[in-house]
Image 1: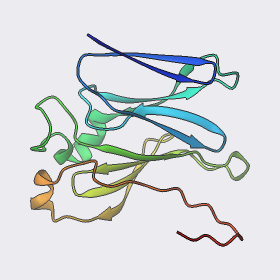
Image 2 (image 1 turned 90 degrees about the vertical axis):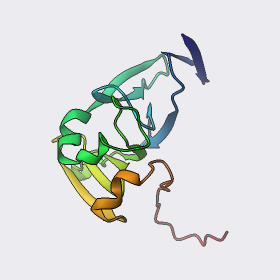
Image 3 (image 1 turned 180 degrees about the horizontal axis):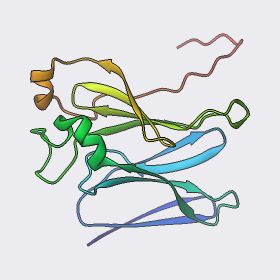
Length: 158
């Protein structure tokens, strides 16, 4: 069993895993989150949030991958994953602003498409389909990245 330790501020996050897994951090609306990024063998995707006092992490959201794979069967029948894994990549987590009563969403890349998954009512919406349905099984996940857009009056140059 391998051991991975990530130190952030005063907190210590420990993960025990048997295979190599990749985790990613997101900041959204002043909250720091962490989740597994790529294909997962568990039936749920757990998203954790850092306590405001940085004393530890708690489970904030749980995504039912079994239900999602029923709507997108190619998630569980992709040639780039093992038999018991789901093919997806987490691109971003966006917390809705509480003053506008917006729900938090998870932006996921599945084989051949990008979907937005509402973490409150567990609904989803396809936002981009970049592959024909018969070619989706051959499409690898994790090749795209998401960049948060923040409206600003300041000029931005590359």
